[in-house]
Image (cartoon, rainbow, N blue to C red; front, side, top):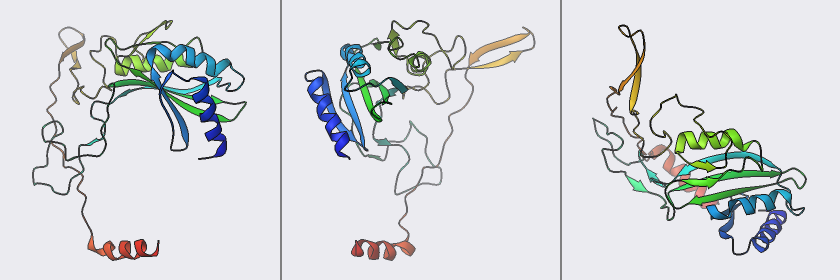
Length: 230
């Protein structure tokens, strides 16, 4: 954490007082959180005001916090048969998420000031709708199409909001945490019809062996000595 980053955070808090749900420095980078109705006003100010000049959108992505902090495979024990995701109970919860299930994250760069910040726009209600920032940063066009395709987040005002990664006629949004790992449909070539057809998925759920955390006595003494010297 540097003084420059702390000073920027103070200026952002003063400028957007009453707009932010939270603001903090996390892993060396500023994160601002706010509700969807504040998005355009905040983004325009960050791009146009001399104190900020975040003229480049480096990345935009959707988030689904449905199973946030839940470890599917970490366990101290295992069995001869393994277990399947979604069948066995999760072994531990490291961190819980309280708040809206979905969010959109924006990573911004100010070339003039050589600074970066992260924005997290919280989506509280269905349908999942936020304003498009494609007119503010042109690079948002395809990023928003990806978030729409994979998460089902709709961006109001987007010039061409349609799927970009999945096939035409694809059902569902594969990056949602409740989307089945096997998918919903599969395709095959039908010899009689002479074309590709869709059908119900025939893949069976795989049973996988979890990652087991074992305490190795060979390294226990070295770890204890290291902790004593610190």
